[in-house]
Length: 216
Image (tube, rainbow, N blue to C red):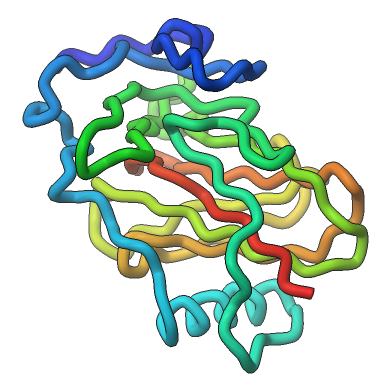
């Protein structure tokens, strides 16, 4: 499948279930899921039990926030490559890259994020990213659990940054993939919070979904 990088509306994917203001870069829906690099055999499962608690506490520790001693509550919001709005949260940008489709075994859909070289500077790249916004309570702790696949190398690191740091200033977190997931945590400082998950340099991955959980 030849991928063409361009920015189009999600309406180009005939996603009538969501009315959103979101731009993506895509070659259009896949007609043959067996040809997708995001085929069902590569889609990670949900995190459960001890592993989810372990990775959430790792994210909290990295952010200098208190860890959990009990399991996480259910996620209040879930954003996917296929469904870009949920419970007041939304994906406002995905790209550049290619939409790989949603199908049996991959109901969340897949969007292949692929950084693009900066003209005149072939050793540097524009990040490919997913920008999310969600309603929050100031002072509360949140964990963002993103499901990804098709990394260049297992355990590859991806970047997260918060709304105040976007697009390129302020602290960023580099998080290594584990079991097909990368987790990020933050303490809300505004009622309309945001977080970005992104590739960097010449890495890429398929984005499936992010679950957002308020902890306290």
